[in-house]
Length: 392
Ligand code: G3P
Ligand code: CA
Image 1 (cartoon, rainbow, N blue to C red):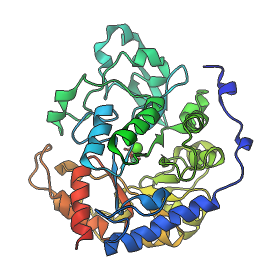
Image 2: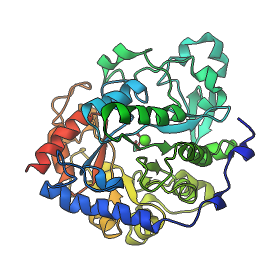
Image 3: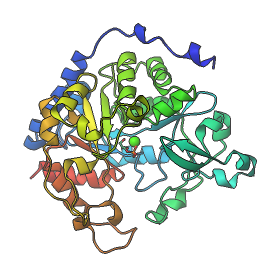
């Protein structure tokens, strides 16, 4: 690859666009409000209708890091199982850069928890401590490895205590690049005779930009090279940092989603810019109106849809679904998981950390709020829950 400067397209090359894309996702909101409940076109089991996001069933089942409930996350094994199980979109992947400017699929730059890097003596001296978005993290970081070096590693299960069976697959798959994912998407679309959708996320974009490894231009360049930077392209882009989505909005025409963490948190780009607003400010009518100016959806933590009480039980839904829909924004909250510790307390069964709780009850409760989709580590339970929901 050339220098970073020469790799990055000028933002001015993109024409001013966006209203058409917003209108398209607005139709998906209608899909959530009408199709999902009526069980007609766009709903579970029905024939897709129309182009773009209107072709997605509602509530949309998004394979979180693939089918990470069953396979080590962000591997082609996990992504393909998500498709086998019937996920409507695969989160392929969370995107971070390498030292030599390639984009790879890992949930965070630190790879000690999801690869076998600790077993590679040749990389022992790369272990270090860094401050990542204000938090001290010790381990190995993608930005300190070339792609060729990362390709010598193999993925492992992140949470073996909750998912002991997944360790069976430790060492089987390498770290995918985003370029490989874009090719894989086409291959899988051909093989399955059905358009495969992906839902990549820019991770820690401000942190990486300060290192000279800006994510958005690299991602846009790859999308453009594959002809997947259009408003009808089967690629939705997401980020926790609004400025990353605003930057992407100038580079590509894909549907864009702003992720929202807990109400009291601040996106890291806000912290860096001295912007005092928190997520609570972003979900006010004013904040949502502003987001709707450059994005087509939000991806809130499920707690912003239904808060929990001090004991971890679900309480009363907030007005966020109605407020966001009013501004034409789709809601794709995160993350559903089958295991007890990740479910609201009132849907747990026993206390075993690797046992499944009443996940269908939890889906039912969240779907009833009118959300347009959900990220889930277990696409199969999400799909069964949608079937129950749509069929009443
Ligand atoms: O991107 C939706 C969801 O994945 C956000 O959470 O931390 O798993 O990327 P995270
Ligand atoms: Ca993610």
